[in-house]
Image 1: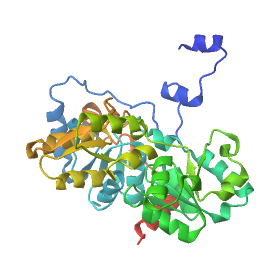
Image 2 (image 1 turned 30 degrees about the horizontal axis):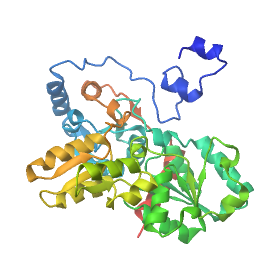
Image 3 (image 1 turned 120 degrees about the horizontal axis):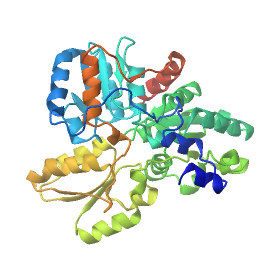
Image 4 (image 1 turned 60 degrees about the horizontal axis):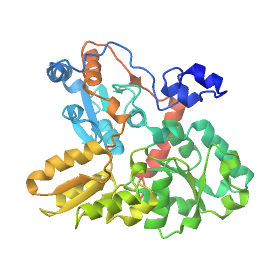
Length: 394
């Protein structure tokens, strides 16, 4: 729809729509809108050789991190692979590396900047590599939510717990208000700790991980959980609903894991008799309830490593990883398929491609610092406090 058509219909594009169209910029958002510089052509036959040469020229000055959901063409140049928190910690453990090139998304690069030294510079090859889930909770929205909790008379009872997949601003809010960060691996431990500190939890920004952990792992009921919608007055909740709830879930989700449905599970069981359904806890509650096993990205990988030859698996997580695992274990006779029939890559993660990586590495090799991700000191201090609380979890 063109601008003229929207005006004719008296419909104004939202700020988010304008941002996605590249016509507006929000420096506090996860999404970037441009990547400065001239990128090499994707059809350049020398891209692999150029990336290898630039990386060799930089030597120990560069440390390349590759998230599990990255393309194969990028992951081949990663010094280490892993989930977002593991990679940030790996970067902090390499103080001799002047440049940390994070092949992931914006919030991951922020976490790396928070955990590394001031001398290290974190680079994101494409500034437009964001995370739709992290974008679903802005600092302003969360501050307004806290005002709603205060007006309901429960703010002092609430402990915020924020998923690693959140912006530095949200991590800082969490640290400032006595909360902690969690990963999909330690969410239960984080919630156990939080309920020792207070009576309620505000879980940001992924409703599904919060709900699944509370109900599946901690024995709460669905009625113990309410959904706070930042786009509705008072989150769409009454003061009584907030006071009765144990888990106040932010209305956010992963665009990839949220696509899997109960129909996906039922369909794959019909198509592949004896299949084991293994999904990530960012999936919807009904999908998690119907699965055979549930766990983080690292859990999924380890489970498939330990699986017997000839076993069959349907995996509910990002397609790049599923395809890589299917290829890796094919020689062992393990059948590994994507849970849904519909192809579903993480579109923002996929913005980090070989041309962007080559451009970033060659720029650094020439002495030009590009696309640096730098968190301001106050935000960093409070975000680091929240992360340190997570590291201290029993």
